[in-house]
Amino acid sequence: MKEKLIHNLDLKILALVFAVILWLIVVNIDDPVKTVQFSGITVNILHASELEKQGLCYEVLDGTDVIDVTVTGRRSVIEEISEENISATADMKDLTSMNTLSIKVTSSKSGNEIDNFKLSSENVKLNIEQLQKITKRIVVETEGTPADDYVLGSRTVDLNQVEVSGPESVVSSIETAKAVLNVENASSSVSASVPIRLYDENGEAVESSRLNINISNVNINQEVLYCKTVPLKFEFNGTPEEGYALTGDVIASHESVSICGRKSFIENISQIAIRGEALNVDGMRSNLTVTVNLNDYLPTGAELAEKGFDGRVVATGLIRKETYTILTKDVSQIRMFGLPGGKTAEILGEGDYVQDGQLVVKLYGLSERLGEVDEDTLVVSLDFDAYKQQHNLTEITNGVYTMMPKMNLPDGVRMDEGCRVLVRVSEE
Image 1 (cartoon, rainbow, N blue to C red):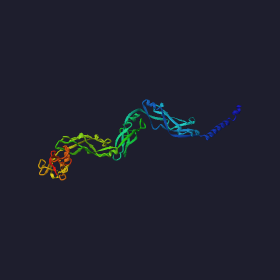
Image 2: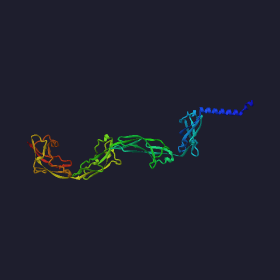
Image 3: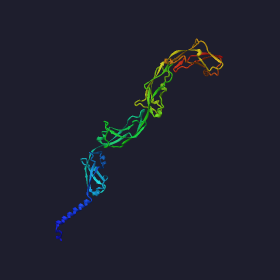
Image 4: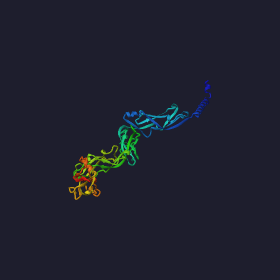
């Protein structure tokens, strides 16, 4: 039996080898070995929180957390695998003294039937730093210019500070946190969610990919108001000392002011009137200078538009000594009003104010006001109806009456208050 087994042994071994090779050829022809590469596989870092517990943080160097993976296996297996099935991980618990993590690759599909994984990089390289946390106030700014005749009003922000954490070398360089709202050509209020940007002391942007920020955007509402320039009207009031008068002229540090608010409201404002007790000149004989705050006189819904102007205005009401001029008027030109029917009236002869048939009376006022008196058009009259009311009379009977003439004098001009004439009333 043994002789039969070893008879032609060489031929038998050769036949066996040939059979195995033939089997391998048949198998590979039917389901050959195949290699495929998956690019850009991101390595998932496990247990990263372990560093935070130690007050540390990390940064991946040189993009070593993105690798290419070459997979080898039977064609029937490989063709069933896609990039989504490939998973690459590196565990922070395996951190080496060289600050590297070894990468492990698995496949969620047919993993046991894959012959080989070949990686473009075997390790993730890290930079380890102290973890730093800071809180910064959010500086809100605007860029651009509103539409013509519009200005920026008040602004509201839903949050006013941001918390940032990350590598000490980066966090320590942060000087400001800004949110910039665009208001270019705006003619109504602007509301938007605006990203928060971080900057160093030189105004250069700080790369935020290495940082953790508790909020990325802030909601800003910027009021945009209609603006208009209106004059100021100072109304000085009261009566200066006898012999003195307000000129009506005012010297002010501002003659006009810019105001803003809702357009429908601001359009109807033609001036800002400043009046009240502060502008009272009673008993004064020299100029009155006051400082007023325009904010106290603005209509509700309007506000000052000029930046940096607090609304304080210095105004001076001018007071000057009065002078006088003498008016003469032929008594025949004095008109009679309210004289009962069937009655006639005549102005009696000489007196303090009647001389040679002429009414002679002093007119007081500032020189420029007296210059406005035109004797040719000036109307002088006696009003019997007014006289009855003043003296509680029911009728005008025959007799002699002492009456004060009336004149249509310009503003700021007054007649001598003692002027009286004697008038005789009789049957017509």
